[in-house]
Amino acid sequence: MRFELDSGKTKCIAEDIKANAMTVGKYSIVNPSEGQPFPDSHKLVVRVSSPKGNNYHLGDQVDSGTFAFTAAESGDYTTCFWANKHKPPVKMTIEFDWKSGVAAKDWSKVATKGQVETMEIELKKLYDTVSAIHEEMFYLRERDEEMQELNKETNSKMATLSFFSLLLCLSVAGLQIWHLKSFFERKKLL
Image 1: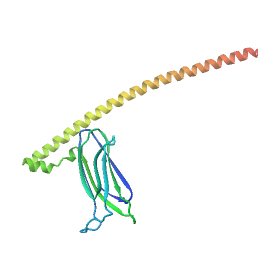
Image 2 (image 1 turned 180 degrees about the vertical axis):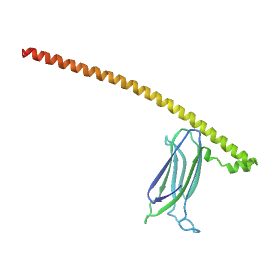
Image 3 (image 1 turned 60 degrees about the vertical axis):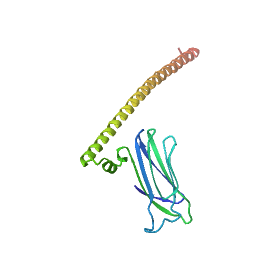
Image 4 (image 1 turned 45 degrees about the vertical axis):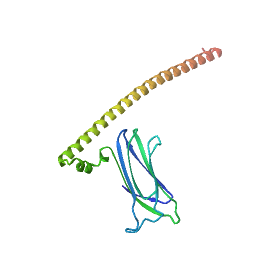
């Protein structure tokens, strides 16, 4: 992905990552002047944090970098880019690539290290993809069970609330009838 960031501004990108999933990120500022060194104004502070606020990566005053980690908990992991304030304002173009799960594995190194055939690499990719889908299905099944339990609890609470509301309405109606009856008896209309 490629995006622009003005000096003095912040841009955050979130990615929903499951627990124990590998994630790899790579970022760099696109050089505005090809073949020239980066201007001093083109520096970033980059921070990657977990859903609970733990830091997984912090790059201070950098023009490029990488990060890799295994997620400790499920949730939205956030990468924030801060650009220093400059006069006159500067607009930076940032190239950012963030992969997690099966996509985060570097298959070219697997082929080089093991000297395996192309077909074996494809089979390993397929196996990892199937494993990831299998884990995702178990995760979704757990979430479904949690939602069903929440739905049952909500229905139970609504039934109790409805019963008490009906009881309250009947009590108020009874009090009104009693009050009207006693009023009419005092006025000798009944």
